Image (cartoon, rainbow over all chains, first blue to last red; front, side, top):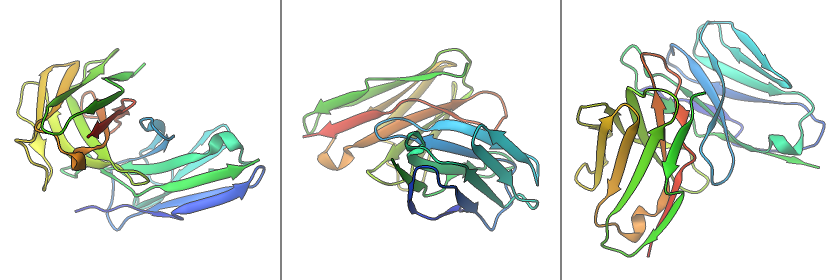
Length: 111
Length: 115
């Protein structure tokens, strides 16, 4: 069974600060996805990373897929209150792997 | 593109009744749909995977007779919670994907409260 771990579990920062959240596994994944979920809503896909070492940028968000495709990171520059939410990584679904979600990182950006 | 809708958004029902939740892919054909449940402040837990025209595959610990899933077309899957009890109260979320890609697109969720 493939498991995804995320750290930190909770993060509370001031507006304007930078932060990085991590998604780790002992298994190799064909791809990893990052989602953001707000209370009472479904997760919204932010990015899919496929190639080991890949870096993708989405405005102030930078996503990186580890060279071995076992881990990923999400870096947010100059965080804003609108970035508040639950950040979930997910992977699998191919090559016989079950699709799994990490436990999430709950981010709170204070004005 | 890749929009998934769910209906209803929220539902309150009495214990012992059945509730049906619909999940639709609006602008693409979903060969595979997934049903998740999420408890407050927790991550998503996969309940079952369904492919159009086939029986759903349930995760370990999920009662197939209690959570009936029907994926009758490439744009519609339904989850029926039968004989609902208060412990079934949760946030139910569906997702859909097309073809062999990994990416799933999620619906907005349905909040079920069983009194």
